[in-house]
Image (cartoon, rainbow, N blue to C red; front, side, top):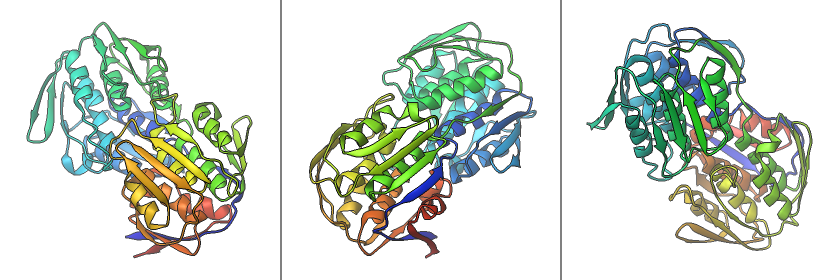
Length: 419
């Protein structure tokens, strides 16, 4: 099992590209089930989660092959299985979005209830109730969701919360349902919009993606298509924080600048110099002159929960008191305990973390508990004195493509070693 060794204290400088979005790629891969014709997806990041998604699809009979470093072709001409087993879904909860397209395509689906990062309950009841509203007969049996429907029918669906996964699952189930579907309180995230664009290129009729109301007019069948996945806003934000926490000067290429308004506003509030261009972002300054900040995670276009852990590492270096409130996932402060091992002064009160910043972090052995926590610890290691040793970095490989190499190209003293 790999671990990372980081010798901190280096200001990052240079240019670095952003890979394709993990959170956009995964549902797009699952959407290949909706047609018997080939689809070609470009700008696909080489990640552990992508490999897991492909293994799941291969088990269902979907043929896949890499046709380039970041390009893949899939063909679901024959779906040979209706089951997404626990062994697959437990490692990546995004696999659960296979339920909608598999049911829509074959009339049957047996999908394990999910696992993934230990950052909260994240129940799938919204997925199930939404697809049930489309006419599916659903039972929960032995840890599996078993769904049947000869053909789904359009419906008006209200989501209690704007869940990204539920929005994507229902959207894929609805595109070939009879009649019209209106999905209210839908998630607005760019990844949902990218899925809608891909489905539209396959012949789906979708209106309003990116708003709280998405309307779908069901079609008889979808066809093959090509699509380029959007850039990863979370990776871009993480790299921006890396520049800020080291007081560096980094230009981030292939950046979806317009999707990062809430993040860039907070960085500027902290005193970081941020210059946005056409697909580029230059981040300079920051530590040691950072100012404290208050932030609250919210659904898009608010501050993303997937960047909360990274910002917590950053505010440890801002003299004064910062307050971070997590409203999306109830257990997403586990990285705080590891940051405290490195000298951070953090007090947790329910969904709020109070960070007394300006402390000098010290390298220490720490353990990544989930994907974004792993990035938080790497950022802390970049700013810390001495050597930080991060174990369980397989979490990092789930969502960041060659991150250690990208950081090394900016001057970071980072090394991957086998435990």
